[in-house]
Image (cartoon, rainbow, N blue to C red; front, side, top):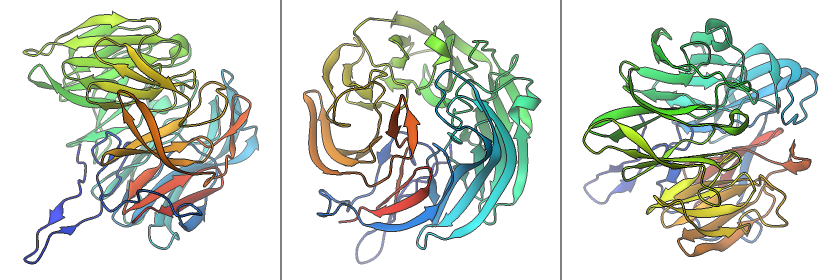
Length: 438
């Protein structure tokens, strides 16, 4: 993965900090760590200043920010009902769009759009954050439209319709596994027979290899591919409703495979690596801990489906710190989970606040020794996490309108981007930029 890291430009007089980019899902190092310094400890009295707002249509896809440009996807419904649906596929027709916005001015630079028919639950719009790699930006729509565009002007380099090419249909909740660029390859979940995951040449879109079959009635899962190093090898970790696998990233050959059974096909979070252990948790307490061999690329299941252990992550990627996983369970409760035991150290509903209704959501990003949480209520929260609990430092309430509906309540579900000492976040009406500099 060609992640652009923020470096210090060494000068004769003094070091000058260069602003971070946020080139794809979970930030520059794909771990939800925001590396910049000079960020607020507490918000101004009226909350962080909104620098600009750009009109957008529906979607859950967070933005990417690179080189003074902001990239985001949306969906303009032309016909049909975009209500939540839960376990029911909703048919709508409309236009998916990739839009590039000037980071300083909040003005459109270019757009790329195409007509698409949705037949998914929660048909409000795309799920995947654009992935920026050098002169190209890669986007994946909710119905499997994968495109490589030029960062400069949005012109199409290549595009694929994954459903057509691999003779499958979208998962119940749409294509939601953020593609991964690594070296000259792009990895993405495609679906279909023998092509659960595919590796493509990132410059041409040509298939290099494909691997695996997942045939759950709801689809083939939503977990983004990830790369770890274990057993002396780089391993591509691919998760689906029936398994967790370690593959050779170059060839797609399988190093190991451990059985897993997801409820309703809900394989969503990216497995987290803690020492020699790989943890994955899914809907309704379907969790698994895998022990990775230190000397060779093999693995075995340590435990799985422990009741009252682990965290069943659905809407939010958990955060690993010092052998403890912090994350929101499908119950809406935040747990601190010790690895490798899976023991829950504490639980809390304080981050989102209010009466627990189930599946509450707050996106978690670490900055220095504290965390920023963007909640489904549109609040931005600063706080600390450790083995003893959550401590709130400050909260800016309702900085984004709750324009979406889930489980009968209003929400805003978007993974923000943090770059250039700002937060970039969207709902179904606007893409907004907030100042977080001291």
